[in-house]
Amino acid sequence: MRIMTTTATDPEVRAELVATVRRFITREVMPVASDLEHADTYPEDIVEQMKALGLFGIAIPEAYGGLGLDLLTYTEVVEELAYGWMSLSGVVNTHTIAAHLIVHHGTEEQKRRWLPRMATGELRGCLSLSEADAGSDTRNLTCRAARDGDEFVVTGTKMWVTNGERAGIVALAVRTDEGISCLIVEKDPGPRFGGIAVSRNIGKLGYKGIETVEMTYDGHRVPADALLGDAGRGLGYILGALEVGRINIAARAVGVARAAFDAALAYAQERRTMGKPIAEHQAIQMKIADMATKLEAARLLTRNAAERKQAGERADVEAGMAKLFASEAAFEIATDAMRIHGGVGYTTELPVERYYRDAPLMIIGEGTNEIQRLVIARGLLARASGKAAG
Image 1 (tube, one colour):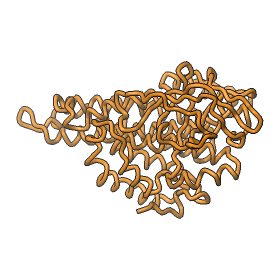
Image 2 (cartoon, helix red, strand yellow):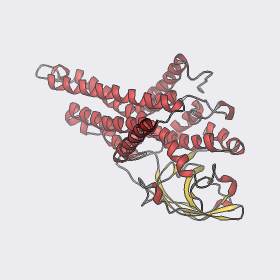
Image 3 (tube, helix red, strand yellow):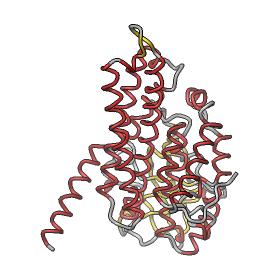
Image 4 (cartoon, one colour):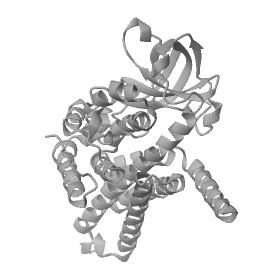
């Protein structure tokens, strides 16, 4: 069944869309997630069902075959995906960021070339910004695209590319004569596109079942019409799109935190010690109260950031706050869930240990929380200076 939408901002429509995804997660994902995750197996069948639901076109306008959902609906869908298995939200995240870049900075020809196939999931997208020495320091990029007639010749190595192996196009940050630019690189097997290699797959503590790879470009030729927007302005485009990515990370964190909290709450009512459920012990009740409060605060911060971004307002501070708080809360809630479960929480028999391993990804991904604090502080200071000047 494909999700249908006529007015994605209508609360009733949004609720039905989210309920559809929740039923899908309950029926198709939760029974198999732990086995797939422990085996580090890519969920081919689940991804095909996500395509059928239209989730790869979730933020692509209806004019190009997508669902055209608002950002708030998107965050609620991401929360549901992460509740079932956090890796599924990663399958759509960098794809959605690449689509966001094309929607907001692409030419009409570029939109019609790529977006309809991205909306169906036939063409998967990913984002490639980081390098070994340019993660948080994005201005230190060395991957270069040299102009050669009506083509760019790309040379360099990129790190931490989620979906890099399976994606058909890459939103690639490169250094050109004008500065940092963004190219939409097609991974076509033809001779014109033969200089890309996935040089290694990077193992991870959690976030399994989805590839994170190193990619190398060895004199790879890209047509000049793959340039997104203006040369030299690519970093600004990507950083703007990463506000969506950070809201996605916050929503993922809320999903993982909710799953951990629900597991802890249920177990606390089942497990008995000293003649009564452990939920009746004050020490456990204190944990439950703190977990629930953090979860609700994380969800509200995420919602606020999504609403501001959707309204076209500057949301760097709000997205940073949501990502910072929600990711730290998810790790704390997952840790407390494990402690409430005791010894069984440390085993692979229950998904609690998966939540504990998945949560740190949100602390690091889309800009570390140390960087988020700088983004938040600088944004607040800039706003204060602007008000003072006004």
